[in-house]
Image (cartoon, rainbow, N blue to C red; front, side, top):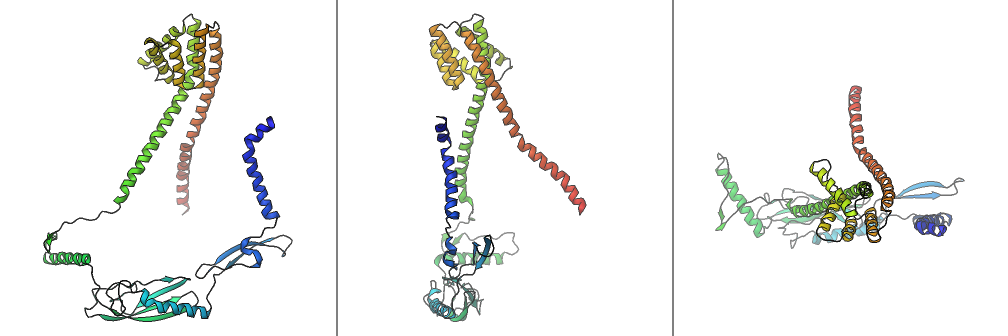
Length: 408
């Protein structure tokens, strides 16, 4: 039975450890080769990829295997392959860079100039007249004449080893504005004219209307889209905080109930031993607690508060046994359930040695109370570790900073 219990408790851990050793033995002892060095070859990366670093073991150089490392550059095009691929790209570029334009002979919208292509090929663009059309394909309206102007646009292709270039003739016209861009430019021009007219004034008046339309101005706010998300996050954090507080309160209540149990049993034993019945002893304990609470001698204790509730139930006509049983259920701890069961059994059977049973229960309760107190002391010591470590860090900084400054 003992061996079966050990296997049931530790079987998952044993299986994990055994599986790890078996897998290691199958790979190392069985001589399973690594995929990247099987067959005596190291595979290169594809075109445009970076170098690949391999780490592997070599046998035969010495008595023991040696660890080696090799960096293998990516695959490169041959001269013929580079010429064929570059030629295909350069032939297709006039159609690819048009963007919203119909033809390079009349460019009124910005061009779409790619900076890379499939296969690790990069592109650099150059304009001989960047004041009309820059190297990013953007038309500069301020310098472009209405009748258009010719621009030579050059592209250089490279794969790191081979290069190719070609120049394209482009006729650039002033960039065509959309309706929204035209209206925005018109308002901006009106503001500029008003600014030039009122240079001596402390502020510039914005136009109130344009082409019969009433205008309203505001600055677009940015970054506020995250506010709803922050609200959700705060709601979650508050929920977690409340749950944490509730759990902490339940934990504190359990600890207080555990600490008060021995005292409750002791008082019951004393009063019942003095000849009082259980209800009278119960009433006396609750009354003493309430008097000490009024005088401020003791804080609120959950065990005595539950006893006061049970006393109120008895005064309202609830049977003694039912009130005491509900008291143990509300406390929710095994010792209190045992106590309520013991008192209920005494009420039904008239057990004469109740005082002796309470005495035995009190001794057990004192041991439990010492265990709880010891655990609370250990937890308090653990919580003090962080402040002590921070204090140590501050002391080290205070000592080391002057020493380091004096060394300079």
